[in-house]
Structure formats: C-alpha cells, structure tokens
Length: 396
Ligand SMILES: [Zn+2]
Image 1 (cartoon, helix red, strand yellow):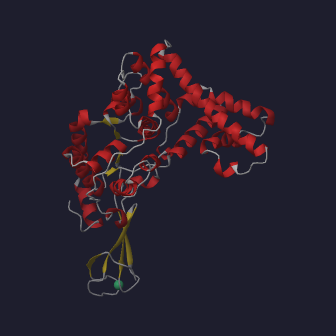
Image 2 (tube, rainbow, N blue to C red):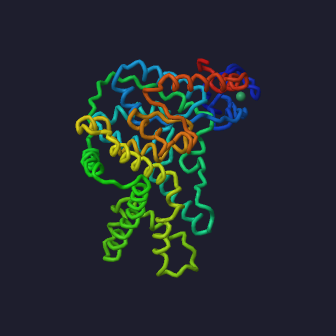
Image 3 (cartoon, helix red, strand yellow):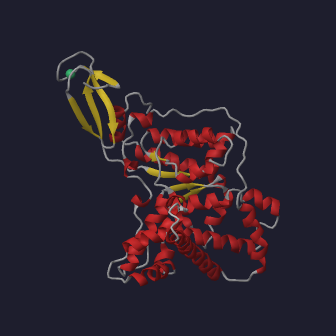
C-alpha cells in the first residue's frame, strides 16, 4: 500500500478501480504503487544533464527588493527551466553567510532556497578544503601541477537527477517585502583605504600576484600554528572554537606518508603552500588573480572617488568568494557589473579558463537568450514524454 500522489487508473495487481499511480519521482525513475495492495512498478527515466547556473547575491537581492522587470523575467524563465528539469540553480553557504548580514534575512533566505528548490552546493569551506587536499596529494606524488577539476568537488551528485515531488512543489515565494538594503559595509571600507597605498606602489602585476598567493599560503600556516599552540598549552576549547581555516594544515599533516619523519612534516606543508600545485587550485587562482587585477585597475586610475568606490564595491569580499569558489564548476554565472568588469579583464579571463559564461546587467539579453536555448535544445520528444509521465500536473 502506498501514498499515491497522482492516480493514473486501476491497479494491475488487485484490480481496484482508480487506486494505482505515481508515488514519487527519484533521481533516475518514477515509483508507482497502489493504495490498496503492494503492487508497484519502477519506470526508468532518461538520464539528465542539467545546465548549472550560479546566481550571486546581487541577483537575489535585486529580484527580491525591486519590481524590476529584468529580474522578474529572468526569475520566471529560471523557474520554468528548473521545473522542466533542464536547469539547476543551487544555493551555497556563502548565500547563507551573506544573507545573515541583512535585516530581513529570513525572508530573503526563504526566497533564495525556493528559487534553488532546496538544492545546495557543497559548502564553500569544503570546496576549498577538497581542492587543497587533492592538490597536496598530487604534489606529494610528484604529479603535474595543473589541478584535476572534478564536478564532485563542489556539486552534489543528485544535481543531474529528476526532482522528487517535494522539490517540484516548493512554492514560489512572492513576498511583498520592501527589503531595506542593509548590508554591513564590513571590510570594503578597509579595502578602499588600501587603494591610496596601492596607487603609490609601483610593483608589477606578477609581483602583486605572488604577494597574494604568499599571503594566502601564509594564512593557512599561521592559523594552524596558533591552533597547535593553544592545544599544546592545554587549551582544548580550540578544537571547537578555532576558525575552520585552522584545520587545513592539520588535514594535510594527516595525509603525509608515514615514511616522512615527523620533524619534516610541517616543512613539507609549507613547501606545498608555496608551490605551483597550490597556486593552480581554482579557488586560490581566481582569488589571487582577481585581487591583483583589482589592484592593477586602481593603479590605472579606477575607483578614485571614495564614496562611489564604496558603493560599487559593496560586498566585494562576498562577491569574490562566490566567484572564486563556484564559478569553475558551473555553466553560467550571474554577477554584478563591477565584478563582471573584473573577471573579463585579460589577467583573469574567467570565461575561457573555466569554460563558464558570465552574465550581468550589461549583457542581460544574452542571459535570456541562453535560457531560451536551453529549453529549445532540451525539450526533445523523449524529454517531454518523460516529464508528462513523471509530473502529471506540470504545464509543459
Ligand atoms: Zn493494487
């Protein structure tokens, strides 16, 4: 006996009238059952290869706050494509962190999760951790430096599966809320204070890049040393309250082969943090190139007016993190104009390096066209038939 969501007809097993139908949809098949007996069937569904789109906070906050037709039109098409099983727009831990800075965070987060139909990326910290450990193992094994990017670094393997009714039924969120934009200016004031110093320095792009990598590598080591120092002093609270970044080097130490003497292990970690393997991990690469490119733009005369710079670069460190963590893993990424300007510079060239399309308000019609193409290409007769049997109520 089953809970039948869509009755299709009489049961082939017990013959009860109008008792047999779809119970639910799983990743690869429809499960059908009977209200009266244990008769059931599994109907296989064709394999899916969804396009994956990342919507950064700019999209969600704009769509949520304003009645701007541009966002609403895009949001409608996105909702249609996700229900047609052709597109996935998961949310990430960075959306959650950034949303916590908002006054109406609960409503905004509900909107983000509804748009994503509850689908999530692997948390940002996990992605960073996975990349570093994979690169560290490759470095220890003497393998080449270029990073072996795998979708599973950042994406759940359910992403290309058929959605269950639970996901399909996540209702669209239509709150009539005039969200006050109250993003704390957090560290972007500090960033803009740096600009004057940057303008006076005459280091080259290559030197700036190297400095960014060194700073990142050193921070992993510094956090670990602080953590290990606390543990050595018997301060075991460190296990629970030390910043999560402290555990990167600790994880690295755990995978070092036992034949390397104990007194040389930390040194090996440090060597890795200065190596090309480290620099080639996508998060470090994108982060360092975007920061060094921003510095180059400032040196060329960009962001001279402080007030304007503060406005344009609001939320910069969150934007940077969204992009550096997830852009290498998605088919397309929607970001705001200042970030788009940064990632299209030849010194970043994000699109060609990671085969990702980038969209912003300056090429919005291209975003809409891309969404249209997905539907045109994906709605084969086989796909239509599968949609109709999996989701009898769906408007196709
Ligand atoms: Zn039956």
